[in-house]
View: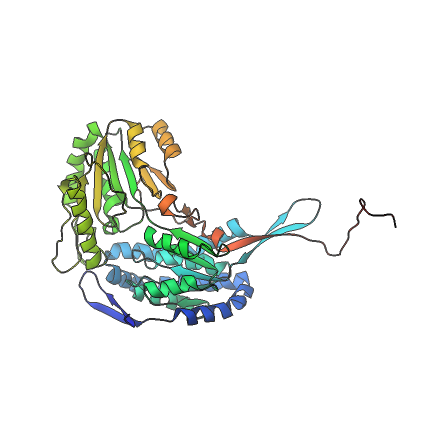
Length: 468
């Protein structure tokens, strides 16, 4: 096993930095020792420290956005929106904490109270597509609730992870309160296996999420919040707004080069709308600018994360073609040595057996159906259940779609992606374990404790005693 992780710019192949791998056991030991002190820190002090963190990020927003763009390859305009989400997460989390897990007096003849306690040591395993925003979405509410955090960033984006943790430390949150763990799969497995870890907060693939679930199967007291992606459907039904529909499809399928868990993977179209829709969609897809994060003018789409990911996507594309899919726009490399890919569309209407794999990149599968019931059935024909969207249709059809959709996010005339941080975020099936994040992250960062209380012991037993 190499003792270092190398961060590389996808758009150029240039090295950003090298990082020594950390020892998970030592990191857990230090965090475990620090948990009581942070839990005992007043809520007002925790809030103040997190607000200092947000201020520091705001002061250096452009530098952080530049690093995100370099390490992920996403366009600078998109990296800037990620930084703003990092900043906004603090106030959103403070509001959510008060609403979801605040102290309450319980009504009744006996005085009672509802309060919440932190779990203790929380492991946060971050993804590469939003290397600051998504782990931050776990870290902020975890710290606010009084937990200490062990953060292992993706081995593909360690530089952003290191920078994010440095902001916490500069805000006065100690090294053992937010601990950075640089490493690969082995470090992640060791972290999860340590029984001193009280919670695992994960964003990534279903394969890894299932492995985490299995590793924790005999530890029911260890909280797990798993967000594991999706094979998300977008239905286009009765509409005459084809240009708008095309723009929503492009936003859904190709933003972040398709590397979003909420990206539209499957486009389900009413058969008699197909030709007109494609007459609007294909010219827009052909106009998508793919380029480096700092190109001027800015591209819509950057590279995928690395050459291994690009190669895997090309293999997945070829498998679909071999299984009967018809190429509308091919997936191809636009640079021989770098992971730039063209936006692809495959028609899988007549494919005998459709794949349910999450193809994490700029590849959209299209199918034509005749009835709205067929469209809903096709949308639900997946083991995932994160995001689904209907474009067009009537209010009654949307109500029916909403009622029958198996997804945690159901939209109408909006993209499948771009969820609000002020709402819960999560899915069902292979997309998650019913612990939605974002606004509801407060729910899994602490546990409720109910109490009945009196200032003096007062009791009497009136039944069932021998007379004294």
